[in-house]
Image (tube, rainbow, N blue to C red):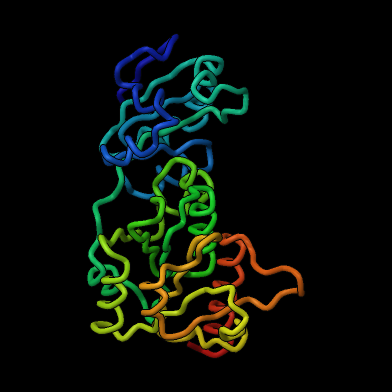
Length: 273
């Protein structure tokens, strides 16, 4: 373990921690931030590369053996709690942040070949809010999704707030970043025979309990304001909506994903798919 004690945050190696408000810059460099004890521990357990760790002496004392086992060995910066808190600007820091390396981009064929059938893919179209993306990733992991597909108009699941809201589940589910979601859907339909289901608020769509979500399926979630782009929606085999009380026209996309993915899980378990 490469250990270094600090009494301030001026070290050049800490630049990524000082620029937490510039997450897109981190992504361009192939890096992401994991903050908080549960998220950091899940990163350490994931096998992904940990570049460096910034933590308090108390946290180091508690988890020294876990950190010493990381390969390759990350740089470990130890600073008093009041110094570490200066990064976030309020006294709620849980004592640790880690800088990880975004895993290499995976090919669809590779991901599907390694996954157990039936596949349940989750695609994102136009989701700009990183917190929603993170919760959606957590829901996808909870209900057994095969992979997350972040379209070119969506925020990356590796943005800091997405990682935090996923509670580290992003480290256990493959993430694909196609250059064109529409083209990717075409390939998925034509080459792999996957049914594409649009999560839609239109009550003219198929009610969720009546939508067959067994077999190899990709569910596409769009932005709350605009929904799916027309070219993406046109490529879907079917649209499904969540029946709800009159006067409420839609759910937050993260909440909607929980309902849809739970139903997919329920059908697959109860009907043996």
